[in-house]
Image (cartoon, rainbow, N blue to C red):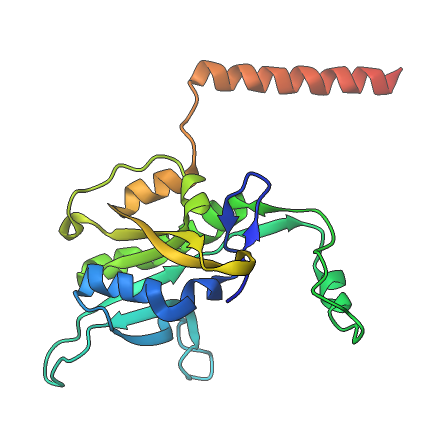
Length: 242
């Protein structure tokens, strides 16, 4: 069992998406909730978007993939597939590179795992608005037309970094089901296991608003900021000219 990264405030953050695969617990949770099947079939990295035909007439390669497709098991071959898409999002980090940490692990005389070097922090702006939000904007509209749901798996600190989202009461009115993961003690040595925390049903539009993470300021406030920027720039120019 891997050790998740622990933040100074005490909350655990998932920095590797494979952490969410442990014991397939979260996949069973998604299957139960969306497909009424705790043991769905799994197809990984399924091509979803294709590029146009190339100049030589060959078909383009996949240009977008869904992390996973969960398929309800036990269906007859003649029946329509019942499935849901699944996106998994861990948090990226900003700060010092990890090359030195990996190099230290090659030391054959290392008595134990070394403490990580460097200064790093979770980067929710890169992980949410810059990475996850475009994925949802590209994929969910087509899934919605097909009558399929998108499940998104994140940990609690990641979800709490997102702005408020209006929720819908029933999955039938939702585009996206957010599966929020927590941790609990798994025995001695400080190891943790994944636990189910909360499911949040919402629409694509409300999810995008939440991931954007802000509300427009009044016009007067924005124009005041413009004036302050111009004033500061003018003052710097005057000092440089002296």
